[in-house]
Each structure stands twice: as structure tokens, then as C-alpha cells.
Length: 327
Image (tube, rainbow, N blue to C red; front, side, top):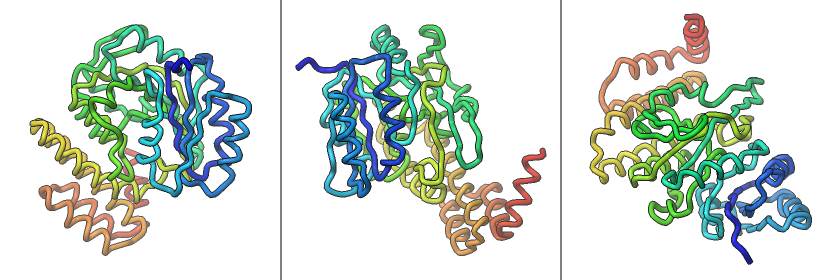
């Protein structure tokens, strides 16, 4: 059997109600030469029967069910162990692809073989706030990247990737397509991380010398809703701390001590966000613990300010936010 050019990896867990639309957007690509590897991370809903219905209509689908819920990095890695394609496209079980996503990306990768990781702009659709905004407009730090133009709206990153990512992760997983050789050289997802595992992977790839490029046009819709991983605030910020510490160790091992100040800035912003969250919940005990943890990386007035503000509770946080938005 001839191997497909692209292996699409779609991990999922209890998302049967969202999957039909997601699967239709992937299988409806105008580029046809791909396989879709669906990794069911121990779902207890009707995911299995749903996927089998789609399999009966489309032979490009490979379905693997894990015996229990093992977490997103494990699920992605299980998919990676089964790939046959030259390129690996990442997908999420609640986001939608534009019809031309794969064809646009394959055109770029085949024309520029030095590119190891290619991503694109995306639509961030917040179903809670009823907002729709381009991701690159939301993450304005991307403008600080040093880039060279490869083609129409296609740019290769020459410098500043890690520094910019630590200021805000602007790479949306479902936009990413990766040369499979990159995984052979630099490794899979880190299964010790429960969130922000993608940020660690991008930093590790960059430290490994992988070239990143992006298409400056949205090719997916990333949906943010109450049950989405993107929407899990407190848990996400706490897990980000562990990820950042892992990234610091990798930067030190690679001899990139010049990046440590960017790590510290990112860590402090993470603590500030946690202080805001604990202030909204009026959790003085957690605010105090978080402030003490932040002090281990040096005293700064912003951390002190957020700590004192968190002691005022949800009303104080709301008033401050309202005043800041007016300025």
C-alpha cells in the first residue's frame, strides 16, 4: 500500500458531540493524500461508534482506542507511533479546518524543504464571550519576530522565536504541520507535562535547530468554550509553571543562558495571572502561597501589586480591570 503524504493526528476524549463537524472539516480537504489517525483517549461516550460510522464511509481513517485516559501528550505520541506520512499535521477535537488548509501548507513545504515546522494564523472563536478575532492580532508579540519572506504571505523565522513564544504562545496546534524527520531528531511530546506541552515542544525543536515558518492567513477556527482545554484557566496557569521550569532546564542544557531573562519574565506573568484568579475567588491563602513562590525568582513591584490587589477580592479585581480597560 502506498504511504500517504500526510498523517493527521486527532486525539479525542469524550467529544462525540463535537466530532462530526471536526471530522467533516478534515475529511473535506481539497488535498486528498492523507491518513487520519484518531486516538481515542479512553472516551466513555459514543466516540467509538461514531468513528466507526465515519470509517465505513472513508478508508483513510485509522482508529486507536487507549485502555484508559492517559492525557493529551500520550495520545498524540500514540498517533505519532503509527504515522506513515512524510508530514504530520496536528488536529484537535473541537477545532475546524479551512478546506484548503492542507493543500496550502503542502505547497509551501514541498517548495521549501528546509522548513521543519509550518504553522498559520487562525480564527480564535470565543463561544463564551461571543468574539471572533484573528490569532495573530490577539498575540501581537509575533510582530517582534525576525523573518524573511519565502512566498506570498509565507515567512521563515530567522531569530527571536523562543523569546517571543515565552511572551505568549501564538502557535495554535491545529495549524501546525511538521516534517516527520523533526520528531526523529528532537523527540515526541513530553508525557510528564499535562498542559502547555506544545510550548515545550516548540522550544525544544527550536533549540534543536529546526526551522519554523508561518503562513500569514487563517487556516483553522480554534473554538474556545467552557469545556475546552484552552478555557481551563487556573489549572492551565499552574501547569504552565511546571512547563516553564522544564524549558529553563532545556535552555541551560543547550547553553542558551541568554534566554533565561525571558523565562523569568514569562514565569512572573504566570504568577500574576494566578494572583488575579485567586483574587477573583478571594482565596487569600492561595494568593499568599503564589506570591511567596514568585519571590523565589526575585522581587518586583508588579508581583507585589497583584498580590495586594488579590487581597481586595473579586470587587477590587473587577474595579481594577474596568479602570484599566478605560485607559
